[in-house]
Image (cartoon, rainbow, N blue to C red; front, top):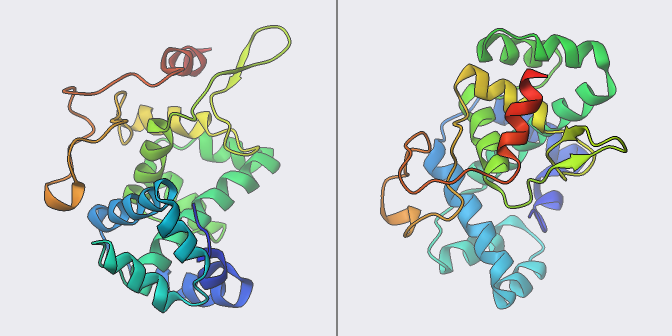
Length: 218
């Protein structure tokens, strides 16, 4: 998904700069988040744009290319999107490697407590940003059920080696991730209000949803 965004924002020196700036400057909303996702999805589907993007060596031509295709973005907005996502993923990764932290996070009674624990360990993001990422993951067709040798369902994700199902179930229990999510959006999100994912109209149950619910009570 990121292409040259790693070089623009996630190299160590640049990441530290943008992380500090992002932590104290959260002026963006879900519309901006979704607009960036839509542009990156367009790049995935358009070989010509992808080739042009591969040739960019700085953020300026990247932003210009996005603008030429109807997506008016800023370096600050893209940095917020990329850095915030990395902080959430890094938290999930370290939690998977640290059982005590994972247990503490999974014991959170509400999202406010979860965010506080994350911040205490140096990971800064909002409840909304956590919800947007988890909804995006849950809506993905890549969400699959994975069984162990005796048929027990262990996870519902193929996102690298991070077991994402735990965090989706937790967010469902809090009520920040809906049981239904949109896979195919109608129309162009740039020209209409973002649909409410908690409404049941034109929604679907993701593959593995009932397995998720089964796991959450076992």
